[in-house]
Length: 72
Image 1 (cartoon, one colour):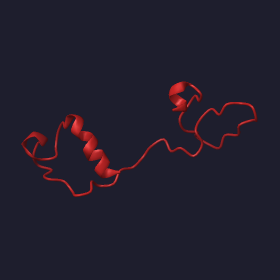
Image 2 (tube, one colour):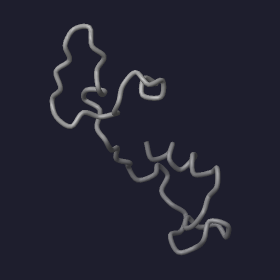
Image 3 (cartoon, rainbow, N blue to C red):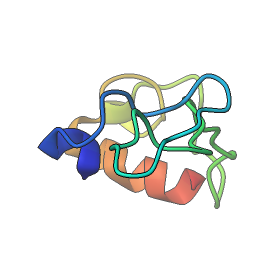
């Protein structure tokens, strides 16, 4: 939220950054610039078929959010 409101310049700090008292931090400390996902809970249906046919390949539209929730 602070990044969106313009309170910080970057999301993640590359190295240790020291902030002097009274200054705003240039980034969010201890935030990784990436995240990793687990395999989806419940597995996949078929990795050979398109999503519209009942598989898991291809464009899902808004249903991608369901898959990501299963992977977190």
